Length: 344
Image 1 (cartoon, rainbow, N blue to C red):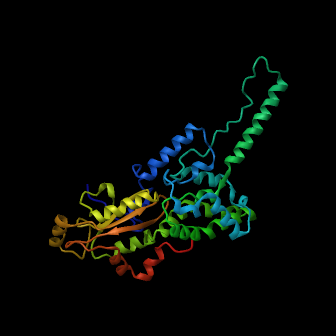
Image 2 (tube, helix red, strand yellow):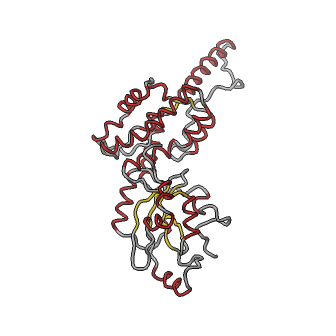
Image 3 (tube, rainbow, N blue to C red):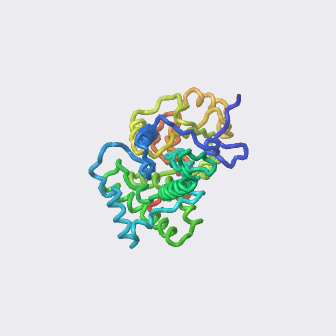
């Protein structure tokens, strides 16, 4: 079977990003989420607490500025609103978004199960008592549903434990305007705008964490398509799990540090593909690359995002594809449009 190229048949999408990316469930992010979900099930806890992307059980004393209470007070001071303005009413579209996000799975629905009219009535129950009990249960279930229909935006953006105090301030400053905008849409009743902002909720939290850590370099799918078409050599993009050559130790260490942020859903490697179609290489050059080629740029990927987030790169005598090389080919002004900016 012939090897598929980086781009799809229409040459307008990156094949790997064209469908949902493969989630690496072995990453710490998912092992911790599984533990959180197990504890929530065990305690029958269906509150908004399970919506938090908790980093770990360890306490970092340097991030008090990101605790729920301090972050809530900060947003109140910045927006002159009460904290209830950040508790969003969930529409059906927003509920569907939550159900599809990797951090939440299918546990959003809660446990409300209103009694059906067709349920049989006990022999000792009179019809009037049965109707009264039904209305009581229905009221209780309605109250529970209303609780489950609330999404605490401040709570969602709090509890990021792997940042220093300086990084926490950068994170908080970046999300401030975004969180306030969502709060305002709740006040004004702009449902369509609220849903639009809600769609990028997870991505914006993750990108804010990356920005606070100085990991702002990224490459959009659009630019990767352009890079592939203009590259003097054929490019390939593969999941790290499918990569069989040695990765330098210093690059591995950076990947492990990135794991601790619990942002990325998988990792990919962009490299020259000696077996791909490239009109700039002779057959002799291709044969040499097949034997000796190394794979230099490591990116993180996030489910729902069309960007590759730069982790590290390396070079050797046979391959010099680096992120700086991409900047040279695309142009600094062009590629910086894909970078994570200070403001959302």
